[in-house]
Image (cartoon, rainbow, N blue to C red; front, side, top):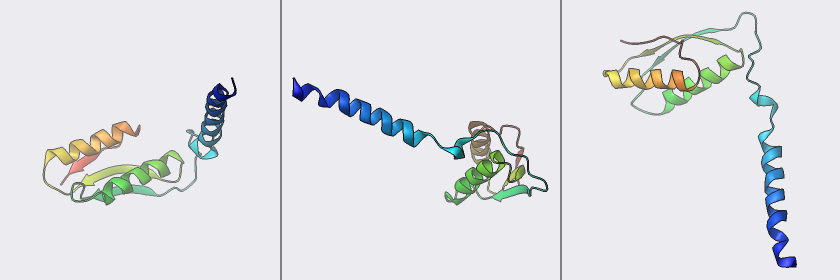
Length: 103
């Protein structure tokens, strides 16, 4: 009978670990309005490397926290696919209202 007690104990321990690690004060979805936040127009060359994707993700995160406001994204590479990628990222991260343009 003892050898079957480890499974419920392991499940309970796993649930406790997941419950404790998933709680974070950093995940508050309501932005705190900040006076005089920087206004950002992100000029990117998305498609040549991943640094612009990470910069866009950081900008989304900062806007969610109320630390900045993204006015738009400029893509300075040829191809409609890159503009579509930016639109997908804007929509996925909950900022479908951010305009983007290809130069």
